[in-house]
Image (cartoon, rainbow, N blue to C red; front, side, top):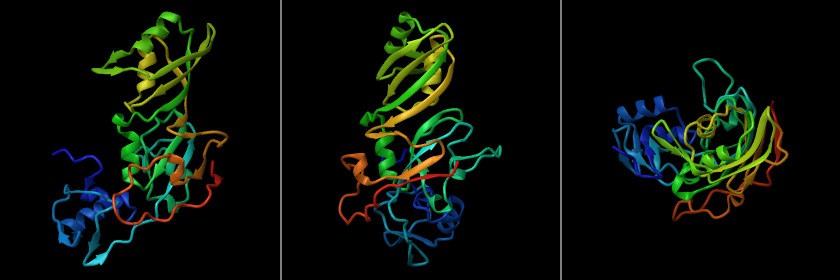
Length: 260
């Protein structure tokens, strides 16, 4: 059964809030120890809104983490996941342990670098990644060989790949030579490896891919492996906030840290 936008399964909700692992939450659910809005729920797939629903275990209210969002400049050779079965370095290895409740907003593949938003606000992440909201993501891309005007026109028109239509919102050729071409590309959807597939379809291998902007946020001078705390106001309007109830305290002025 599909889960309504803005909601997640109960077994996933508490990990989103940084309270417990999915495994621990599932045990609580099946043992009848977890209540949602005062009612015992024994279905791990029960749909909830983590930011607004009330959770308790054995009658004791679950304490949530304060609202948090960061911008990380993801370096290469790092995977965008909490843990990796191959033992590769993850984005969480770059961050302090207290940021363990955050989740990435979308992904960058292992070889890609640049701006990665991480937050504990599932409404915010759902809003930013919903294609209907057309939040722009800007990338600098380097590909092998010279991209011709005809190939550029084909990329702008969009291509079919593996049953998906891949079409950038904007694409600009900044410079080209016989060896490589440099472009700036804007997307509003987060399809899997979209840019690598798009350029492969027109005959060019991507050798460097970096996200430099996401919505109103720009990477700026943030160094690889560095991060900074974000304020709510940096995201502009706030349609993801829950209706009713007071917002958690806004974070103070962001600061930059480096752990890479």
